[in-house]
Image (cartoon, rainbow, N blue to C red):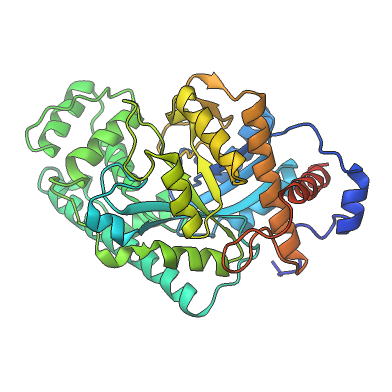
Length: 410
């Protein structure tokens, strides 16, 4: 496929015509899912087209691919979005470090590891052009991640062979059969569950072999619940204390300033993923005070947030969104889908649907990212400059992005 063919906006009118066509008015608010993982990292979806099929069934018009460390799914995603008439947002996710917070024992958006921070880039160029130091750093962290999972597979396989040689694991087989180029910890758990179920047919036999695999500990998972069982396998074998645990090398984590530089060089908008309250209503130290969070993010020139509302309480979620919306932040919502659980693509807050205000915030955030992508594709500046600072009027980006989305999905 040529680069020219990959210009997904080539059939859209020119910018002035796009704006003239809508007469300064935005269309009806559209449903958005701005953050989901795909089989190019790890995902609930078996194939990328499954996302588009679900989006069509649920009337979700704007979709944001958001895989860890890779843009490998962009081309297939773009083609499928054209086929299904859905607008694509080209995103990426990293795990990085805020070293001062790590030294101070401050948890950021990883509730278990002080200083460790998930971080996203929104609206990257398509196709992406990275070279030099940013490409070298991205390649390095990807290689470190691959090295860790290779070691996990080797350790898990040695353990399983000692119990039943038929349960042996092979990294290259996992890579080619279960992934689209990246083996993650969840893949290993899935393969172990699959091999156990293929070899052992009765519930009694499965319970017995799992007990041996767990070093004598009885399985507590529902064997009819693949999600729960794979989670148990990860906890027993692959997490700290497990026989196949491999600690992460510090080289696998860039500092967040380096992550931001990669995102900007790739044409994207730096975006902080918010954890917010957990199931017990607790917050991390970094996120417990909205004003301090605002100051910290602004100091890094980060003016975009994303949330996974299903894990939050509406009573905590909405005031948080209102606060950062009032500060002019670009805010998007998603579902993540980075576990085996195949939940709907429609974004919800806990058990509640998004209200009109939250739907509007979600769509306007998507419009800004869409406008950013479109402007960069025609050689103009997007929503942020190369330092990450917003440029231009936010409302104008919303109008242009809405016009781009409307025309693309016609």
